Structures are given as C-alpha cells and as structure tokens.
Amino acid sequence: MPVPSLRDLLKPAAARFVKHEGVPVPVGTGNAYGKPVTFRPHGGSFAWFKVKYSVGGTVLLAETITVRVETVLDDGTALYIERSRSAAGSEWLSDDDLLGLVKHGRDVAAVRVRAKTNLPSTSVSVTVTVVGYG
Image (cartoon, rainbow, N blue to C red; front, side):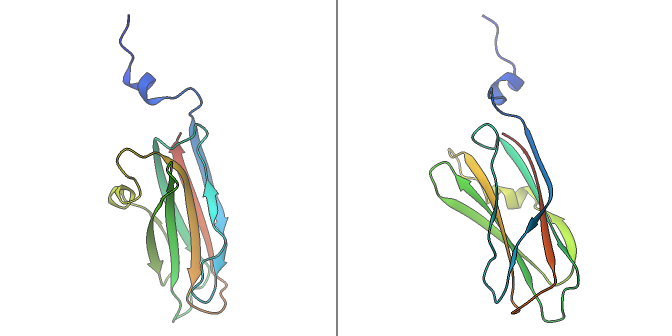
C-alpha cells in the first residue's frame, strides 16, 4: 500500500483555495462596530489563511479606525485581534498575529471582520482581503 503524500494528507476532498479581495466592511460609528463580514472555507475549515485590511479615504485628525479580525472555531468560540489606525493605509496580519487567532486542536470554521470609528460619523472606508485554503 503506497504512503500518502503530504499534499494528499493536507487536501480534504472538498477543500480548495479561497480568495476574497477588497471586500467592503461596514464601519460602525461612535465606537460601536459595524455589521461583520464573514468568510467561510469551502471544505468546512481553513487549513491556512491570511488577512489584509485597508483603510481608505480621509481619516480626520482626532479619528481612530479600529479593525477587528476574529476566527470562529469549530467549537463555537471566537478569538480576535484588533488593529487601530489614524491614517489611511493597508496591513497584512503577521504570522505572529495569526498565531493568536488559532488554538491547538481546534479548526477555524470562519473568519469574521468588523470595523469602527471613534467619531459619530466618518467618510472612511475599510476593505478586507482574505486568502486561504480550506
């Protein structure tokens, strides 16, 4: 009987690459998060993923934009990381950031992204890119 390759072991039958690029994330105001945007893998759980968020438009002098990236695990718990910016720009979450979004022995069933501003209104936009395998 042949020994399965690493590729065969890592590739469940329904798994495939996922790419969602430049997806708008509603920005909540008054320090309350907007409606979340949820990304789910094709095969039931992410084996690997990366996340980039972008803040566009004019960020006002006293404005802080916070983006919250959450993973929803297969047991229903959620882990998250928050990043705040006071200027437009983009950032890929680092491998160290992603380590905080996984738990040993648990599968990542979904990635959820939310955004907010500390001001009562904003003209800022937030988009997110999620790429992964699952």
